[in-house]
Image (cartoon, rainbow, N blue to C red):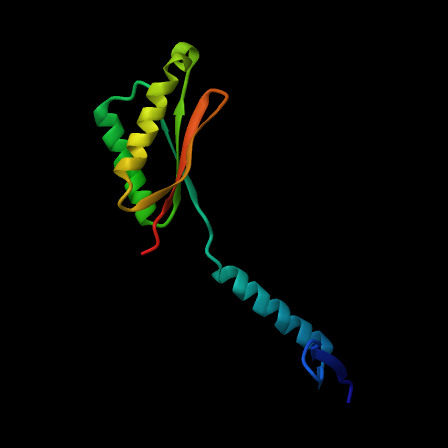
Length: 130
């Protein structure tokens, strides 16, 4: 009959086996795995850059973009880039990031506190589950 004895569930008591075509069984298994992978949620990370001396209007403009990204379900990475001698204003950068997180508190939650890596200080904000 050109069928194979395939072990379906080895952990069951007694183990379950079927007489089926092995290549067809493997094809179906791969197709199910591919479908499950396609349905898995993909994490999108959007970046927003600010400076330590960002003005209020620019801050609000970027804030609206971040709000839109969070509503779409993407994570937002907000970073303050220190150029040249602006590295002196680390406290200003931290304050800007914390204000940003506080303004988005209603639709997003802060994943990490401000971290300084080289000339960049950043935070990550994830959307809240609705």
